[in-house]
Length: 110
Length: 117
Image 1 (cartoon, each protein chain N blue to C red):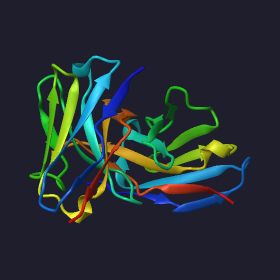
Image 2: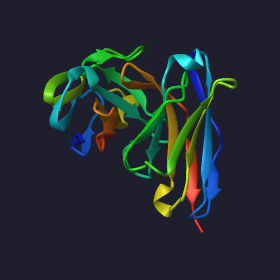
Image 3: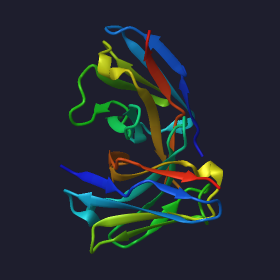
């Protein structure tokens, strides 16, 4: 089973700054199967990015995803107050189909 | 707009069984797989399994195999997740979610299950 490791655990930044979140897989992952979610306290996760770099419907263009193989990145170009939250990466594996999540990165206000 | 509406919070004793429901509104129930995800307090989400509402076929995560049963009722457009032999470590919020491509979108609002003697 592929393990996803996210770093850093916590990112302390100010509104307007750039956030760079990392997701590293224990073995190569198809870019098509790598996604990012945002979760705020008391809410369900929300899909942000699918296929490593495609924004989900309604997601602002300050969110972008990149990467391939074992290293993937979520970038928030200029943090807005509503962006302070937890972020999780997720991958879908095969044989048999299964899904795994990273442990998350918390983006907090500095 | 697609919505997944889950049943309310549950309190169970160790060793008991819990069954949570997830009603789908706004899309054809049999068109999309339904997944279930566990999220323990302060932890990341953990995938439990999925059902194909069209034929009832299921796959489960190894961690939950043998204790979890996921079903779908096409007459009421509702999915169910039953978890048995509950222990304190099963205290968590449980989410249902629709699979689109290989991602989960949207999610239900979550159901808190507390396991306590």
